[in-house]
Length: 119
Image (cartoon, rainbow, N blue to C red; front, side, top):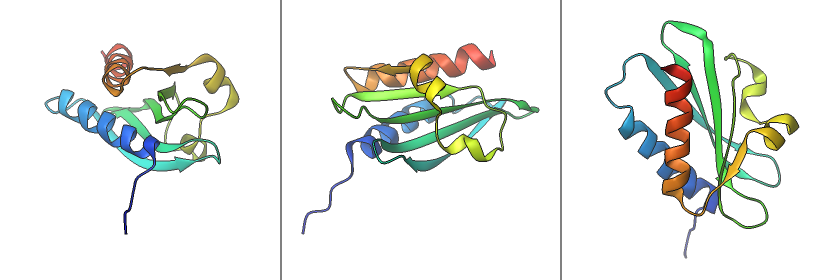
């Protein structure tokens, strides 16, 4: 038997590990992750928050683009915890979604989003 992972899950795991390595020594922010699935995309949502101020937080959804299977990320500045933090909404999809040719490009964009927001 061969067991395979969905491409969105593979992208998510790689990007989250890259982000974790980059911010390994940063004790001012923290993150958690869980899977999401909306019948079109599947991947992980990374919830990042300031350790001193939970009102400063964001979510980054990492997945394979539904038509091309290219790595994709969507992000939004959501105060967590909230039940809406597991799935991006239509506005986020239209205004804060990017597609990439490689997971390394997607990783760098996610790192930059986090750095710009929390620094």
